[in-house]
Length: 225
Image (cartoon, rainbow, N blue to C red; front, side):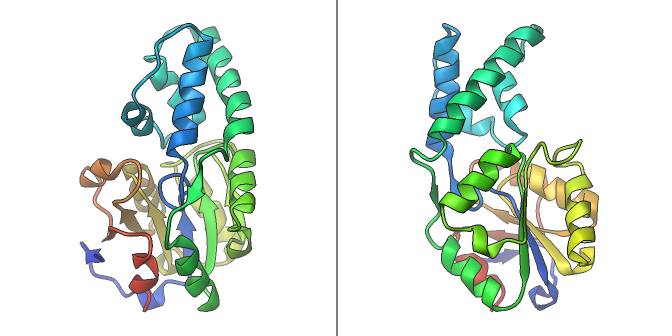
C-alpha cells in the first residue's frame, strides 16, 4: 500500500534517484555467501543470513567491518575486504535478481519521460555490472557507487552531483531506498524520500521516516498514476 507520511504532489517529480540493494534488486543471498566465504577464509564461524543482511547499506568496507565485529586490526579488515570483493566479483549474480514488479514500474516511469539514476553505497563496478546484466541499464542516465565520490550516503555529495549533472532541482526529485541511509541522504540534499518496506532494512525507516512508504515494488508505478 502507498502510504503518505508527508503530503506532496508526485506529478511534480521529474527525477528519481534509486538505491540498488534491497530497492531494485534482491542481492541478499550473494552478499551473505560472500561474507561467509570471507569469514571461512579467515577461520571464523559463519554468520546467520539475517545478521549479514542487517549489516548491508553503508558500503562494502563497513559491511566487512561489521561482519568481523569491528576489530582494531586494520590490516585484518583490509585483507578481509580484499577477499570479500574478489569473491563477490565472481559470485555477484549467482542468486541476485530484480524484485518482481520493478521492471514494469521502471518502464512506466521511463515512458512518462522521467529521468532516473542509481546511487548505491555498493562499489561502482559491481553496481554497473549488475544493473547491466539484469537488463536495467536502459532505464538509468547514471549509475554511481560508494566509491564514485569521496563520501558515501548519507552524505549529500552524490545526490547533489546527480542534481547538477541532470539539471534537475531538489524540489522535483525523489530518492527511493530501503533504509534510513537513503532517507537521510534525501534530507541532507533537500530532496523528498520514498521508503520501501520490502528491502533489507525496513526497521530503520522508523528511525528516519520518509515522505512516502511503499510495501511492494509494483507500487512504484501506482505512486505516479
